[in-house]
Image (tube, rainbow, N blue to C red; front, side, top):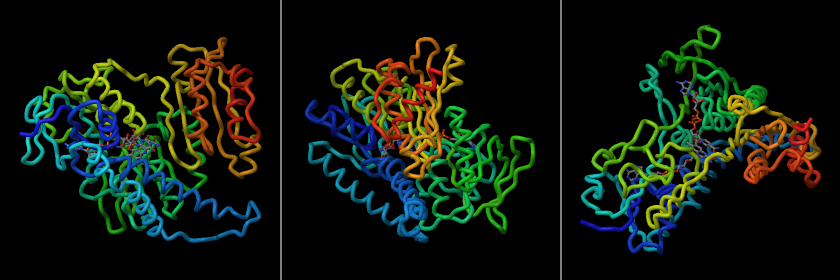
Length: 454
Ligand SMILES: Cc1cc2nc3c(=O)[nH]c(=O)nc-3n(C[C@H](O)[C@H](O)[C@H](O)COP(=O)(O)OP(=O)(O)OC[C@H]3O[C@@H](n4cnc5c(N)ncnc54)[C@H](O)[C@@H]3O)c2cc1C
Ligand SMILES: NC(=O)c1ccc[n+]([C@@H]2O[C@H](COP(=O)([O-])OP(=O)(O)OC[C@H]3O[C@@H](n4cnc5c(N)ncnc54)[C@H](O)[C@@H]3O)[C@@H](O)[C@H]2O)c1
């Protein structure tokens, strides 16, 4: 039996970070990884999708070169080459991640981990005894039990990234972050995309004004959107994959596609971990943890998507570090998720932080809101990227900023000014009265704050 002080199960974002933080703080560290060190973000999620999103954006802009007096490229992309460039990039950034960990003294076990008892984990024929354990096994696509879906076949974020050609007519089931980012990629490279969402609006977690504008802009770009659809069955027919159901108006929904992407959320990866024998409690959402990321078993912590808390890489990083500190030093550290900026890398981008207007009202705040359109920002005009707006939600009277929501170019960067303002409890008067360099998109945050002052 091997023996180790700290064992980390899963070598993705949270696990890699946890291992890195533990180096030097403990005598022996081991990581178990069943696939590739780096996890979903590197191979199946954030990074490859962002390379493709950027390629899509560049491609669209190439065909708008005439605005700047440049030769209109009028080029046709070969998607197989775009995919190959994405693969090259991922290969370059992922090379040697496992060796780097091993070079720093982390023992790497390759295979699937399974608890045999609270302190014992087996990986193939090897049994490892660990004093402390951190579970960082991530999440996987959650596939809805729609009759016929499994038989008809479908893509997930993992297989969609391996496509060599863009399917002609693609249904994306689920209009959340994954669905919207892939819609943009498929649309830009010539696919006819139809997002089918069961909630009554696209991007249902966003502020309502953002999601309605997103729908308008996506439809303008040629992406079809159907919300409030209840899919009843999927069948293979001679002309393709037939999706049937009922739409929001009670009308029959029937459409044939050449391919289907399922983007309906995530489930925690707990398969075969045998958590019962470890004494670790879990629900369908994930492993249950307290504020310090400690599980129901006192010597086991969990971090990243497997906790079901906020499924983002930047959260997995922080949680990986916090879990190690608490496991090794009993630091009692916790994270505050109240001010958690998020961004969806569609075109234009969408980002938000804090309360939506509706949530602020539901929480009993009297709110003042202010919006500023990209169309009135000189910088946006100069770049011919004038779609979208910046919306600020503040508490009436005090002017304290409660939330910010942006749809438009560089929204993913602009949102951090709002987040920083919220952390320092700044007001719309503070930001509205602060110099902002001209011409920048950031001016829009200032003017939206001024607009919220009336
Ligand atoms: C399409 C898509 C795009 C995304 N884009 C973004 C983005 O732009 N920005 C952002 O912040 N977030 C994004 N996310 C979310 C982000 O990918 C996740 O939050 C992040 O990868 C979670 O990291 P993790 O360490 O919890 O899990 P992972 O990185 O998935 O790591 C878990 C690891 O555990 C291993 N494992 C599982 N079970 C076992 C076992 N029993 N034994 C051994 N090893 C095991 C797996 O092989 C895997 O390597 C995106 C997600 C998707 C699906
Ligand atoms: N840019 C980013 O940071 C980024 C990008 C992608 C994913 N992510 C992370 O990954 C998580 C998962 O993303 P996601 O888009 O898969 O999930 P999601 O929960 O964001 O969206 C899933 C959508 O599918 C819909 N849905 C569920 N069942 C359905 C059905 N049967 N028919 C039609 N629609 C259905 C839901 O109503 C929801 O709107 C996100 O919450 C986010 O944390 C982040």
